[in-house]
Length: 542
Length: 95
Image 1 (tube, chains in turn orange, cyan):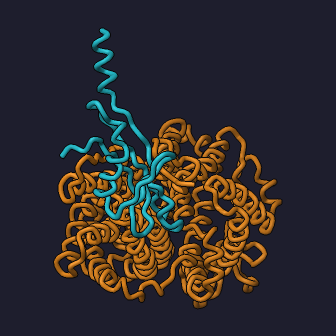
Image 2 (cartoon, each protein chain N blue to C red):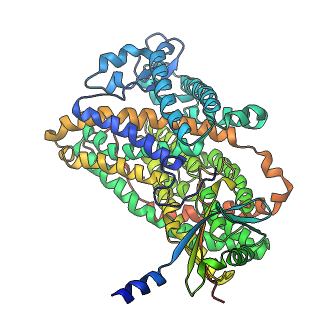
Image 3 (cartoon, each protein chain N blue to C red):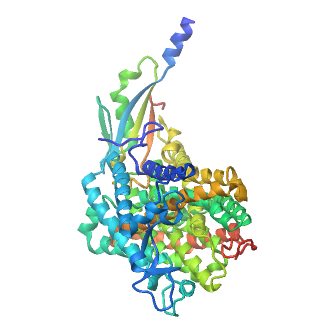
């Protein structure tokens, strides 16, 4: 059976892109029910930093004992069903989380006509290994910072201070081990290892996060709530710069490198330029179609993209945190990440890692006197990427017109304008809906965080936190794990890619990343992050 | 009025749907009634034009809407972008 996109509604039930919207918005909608006093999302199991046993004199504040390593978020945040969710306990909440997401994702798998049995087995494996890694990654040795130790009255001890980033790194490592050393298992799991689906769903949940940030901050002070609402809108506007950079600076640059230095054929150079400059695999496929290349060209380039994206994901968060721009300019780092890392999965994952690293470092450097809101650095990385993603359809349409009407003139051929819609990333719709609904709650019935709106904002928070914190992080974890499983480094060594491997390497490290950093600096330098540890205080920036 | 209706009907452009794919060597366009295979899109268009000549006789025009079968793209890539390209061929080809 063929899979074609013929009408504007084609693919609504059969593509991962649309299923990210349905899944994301379904749980977002369930979260909104807390405004009516109905809490249907508090079951999500979330990890705490833990130790096997508490040292003498220590208290369970930032670090808990192993039996409390997971808790249902509703047990802490729910206004109407706190006792019920608390009664689930760690194991119960993990099982409920498994059952609900198994049903939800298997519905998607069924409509997308995947092998449902294989998906179920693969999903079950990936889900529980992910939770196991999440558990290990939250051991105090990996995750706790000096501030966590101090707040929990722990004696001074050595920890890696990686925050939640430790779990992400571990998930990626476990995935890569499976993907590169247990290839038959990786092939079997590939039916359920869907990083793009997981990350697009996570990005819809991130939309809840962006809208919820001012609500959360308003609990600290009304002023910080407004500052965060303004900051997210500033990020949205500044992110537009990324579009110009990707399409009008990166693309011509990489195309020129490919043609003049590496003498690649015109179509291959165009596909490669889009992949390296714009948004990775999706741009490679869109451009391949636009220039009427044989599909194999896009396939070869896509294989390179996923490997390079993972390499970037591994090295850039550390470089941006500890070398440049560091905690002085976290928004610059996030935006540069959004421009430099291709594929939505790797970019959002790298942004999340950066968020964990930077917040932990800031908290530690300031001895706990400065605490940045969680997720805002991820938002800066994703916002720039979303801008770039949104224009791929239009760009491919322009390329198609240039190719069909000029370069390889095909008499009688017309390029349908519907192509722009077919290539539009639909998950972006879910992200914006979630963001603007929560922003609407903040400025509407929430009265911008003033005292009279607090009861509404509290009710909104009970539904938003399990989605933006628990579900979003779970789907990020699933993304890291799945990215590793589907990444096969051996592909880089395959001979026929040799020229493309070098174009990619040179363009990425000597052109894209430096220019992205400069542009991010120009448009994001000086953006300030609120200090959540100092109610009513001035904003703390870089 | 009748003349206008007749003129409108004559100028109305019929659209024929086909599915386009690539097997690694050739482009293939097909529907329930015809199937054409060629190594380049230009050659494919000429073959389709020849096969459908009766459909655009008497100065009529025919649009052939070719929707790409995205199953030609490996499954692991489709989540990133589930659309390769669609194209319209306007027959007869104006040379």
